[in-house]
Image: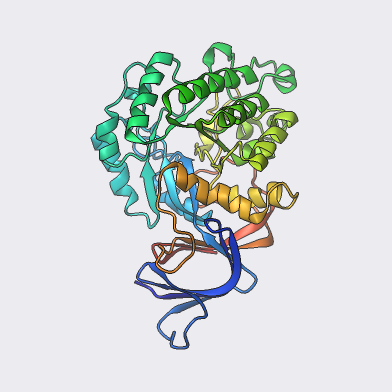
Amino acid sequence: MTEIGIRGAKILDPLRGTEEKADILIKDGRIAAVGQLPDDMDDAEILDASGLVVAPGFVDVHVHFRDPGLTHKEDILTRAKAAAAGGYTTVICMANTKPVVDNPETLSYVLEKGEQTGIHVMSCAAVTKGMQGKELTDMETLRKLGAAGFTDDGKPILDTELLRAAFTEAARLNVPVSLHEENPAYIAENGINRGTVSEKLGIGGSPAEAEVSMVERDCRLAEETGASVNIQHISTAGAVEAVRRSKQRGSHVTAEAAPHHFTLTEEAVLEYGTLAKMNPPLRTEEDRMAVIEGLKDGSIDMIATDHAPHSGEEKGLPLTEAPSGIIGLETAFALGITQLVKPGHLSLMELMKKMSLNPARLYHLPYEGITVGAPADLVVFDEKEEWTVKDFCSRSSNSPFRNWKLFGRVRYTICNGEIVYRL
C-alpha cells in the first residue's frame, strides 16, 4: 500500500470536536501518526495541505447507483467516481434497482461490485417484496448478508400495520428503516410543489400535506415500536416540526436534508424546468428556511444527496412526463459551504458532523475520527476556493447547478489509505 504524508493541514475531527494544525502519516490503510512527519519519507507521496482542511471522508446515506438494470443512467463504478470526487468515502445505495434489492442474489451483486470501486459501497434492502408495499422481505436474512438497513425509497409504504411489523422487526435487528414520505392520495402530478408555480404552469402538483401526514404517522409508529426510523429528503416546514416534536418525546427518529431542498425553491422550476423536478418537490422559501432551521437545531441530523441520475433524453421530456431527480454527489459539499457555512447557519465543524459523523451513526458504521490507528478514510478540501460547476464524473449530468459559482472544493479523497480522487 502507498505511504502518504499530509503536511500542514488544519485537521477537523467531528467525533472529538477538535481542530488542530498538524501533519498526518498514513501507512497500511490507516493513520499511523498525527503530529509532525518524520524526515525519512523518501518512498512516500507527500501532499502539501497548507491552507487546506482534512476531515473524515463524507458518508452519504441516500444514493441511487442504478445498477443492476438501469446502467444507461449510471453504474456502480461511475457512481463511485462521482462519490470520490465529492469527498465521499462511504455511500449507502437504495434498493429501487431492476431487479429490486429484495433478495440475497441482488444484494450480493451490489456489494461485490461495490468492492471494486475503491470506496465503501453499501446497500439497503427493500422493506417489502418488489417494493410493492404488500409483504415484508426476509429482513433477518438480508441483514445477515450485509444489508445496511431497509427502505422502499421511491415509494411510500401506505399499509400502516405492515409498516408497524417492519418497524418491530427492525427494532429487533437493531437496524434503521428509511422512509420516502409522499402520500399519493394528495398528489395530482408529482415532482412539482402545489402552489403558485404549479398554478402558473397548470399542473396539479404535490402539496406539503402529502409529506407531513406520513411523517406524523411514522413518527408515532417509531415511538410505539422503538425502531430507528429515518425520514428521507425532508422538504416541508410541517414535517420538520413533526420530527422535532418526536425527538422531544424521546423517539429514535432521524431526518436527512438534500442540498437542493436547502438551496432552491419551487421558483427554480420556472428557470431550470425538468432539472428542478424531484420527489419530494422543491417547496416554498418558508419551507427552505425551515429545513435550514432544522439543520441548525438538530431536528435534521444529516445531509444526504439523493443522487438520482437520469439520461438527457429522459430529462428532455415534457415537465409532466420527465422523471424526477437530480445528481448531487459532486456539488453537495460546496452547496453546504455556500448555503450553510458562509451565511453563518452552520459552522464548518457542524457541517462535517452532518456529512460524516451523524450518517455513520445512523447505520452503525465504524467511526474513529482522525486518530492513530483509525482507517485512513479522509477528505482534503479548500473551504474558501471559489469554482464554477462544469463537467461531472457521473455518467449523467441532470443538475440545475451547472455553471453555478460555489465555494468549497475537494482536492483529494483518500479511502483505505489510497488516493481515490485528486483534483
